[in-house]
Image (cartoon, rainbow, N blue to C red; front, side, top):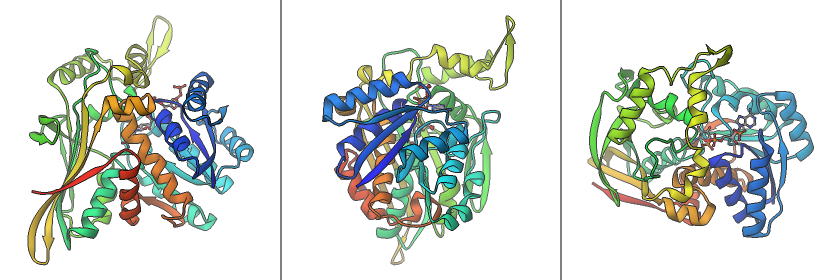
Length: 395
Ligand code: NDP
């Protein structure tokens, strides 16, 4: 029985709109707002054709707090889902605070001028959200998101104390292009070309990009080269998982992807500072994004599976144990269901579930929270029902 405002009509936004429409007994009124109205219209039509549900659409500049406030005052949502880019996190959080509406996102704040992401500025809203009696749920995608919930689930059901966590993210899909990213190219390339970082014995240890590699045998996919990256969920997990001694994040990349990325980096195409070109000011990575395929168009041509999970080691009743919790998602299946590839799907479904937890009051709190701070059980149950079933193996 709720009214949801979704901001951002990209690859992930499409999945969120479809999944909210599939859950229309929870989300009775759906509004989609974004920078480009034609994309909102496309998704509005898809939802009408597939589910016979009418959604409202609006144009909004999510960099502008006043524009957001007037949209929120007009739509009067119970919750705003920020499915735009990490650059808009603070403006949308500010607008939610001004209007007294719950907030949710899938990626933590990043300033356009520095490829560095951290929760500091979003956590700084905690007391103001608490005083206002509203909640912000940060990072409700897959990773961050489901991976945090998997950790909380392991903690609750399998361990007295968790000592190490490896988060393992494999996209075994093939879209047939020589080079493309599966979510927003600018955000994706900034993330994977940065230095790696992991946490051990209370300290962050920095590595060169792709310096640490291992091969992991991903169920239903097979062995893949997996590289250590910094990933934002580690920042909150080190605070909230008791007894943790080490946490790392690995993602798979093919040799071809890495060669393309290195070459683009070497010629300056990943640059984030403005340069002058023939009298025009351009930012190289944004120009590259214009050339690369739009991730929201990859769905139809992507084949294969994703497998994302966590391996946790620790103790229970004095015994050492290792648990692997993971989900496998098939690109063609998700395309059939939501016209989207599995990377958008695995992000959009948890965003909808996070909103469902809040509006159905299964997760209730005032302030700013990360996913692992809530009871994982209702979220895990919803994953099984909403298209992202998971497995637990004892290794
Ligand atoms: P896209 O680039 O496909 O979509 C972003 C959308 O936001 C576009 O429709 C864009 O508009 C809109 N937008 C951008 N800036 C503004 C603005 N100022 N005002 C209004 N709308 C704006 O990205 P994705 O869908 O691939 O990714 C969405 C989010 O999901 C990102 O934050 C990404 O980091 C996150 N993500 C999280 C994952 C997780 O597991 N936690 C995994 C993958 C992604 P326009 O159409 O005009 O460009």
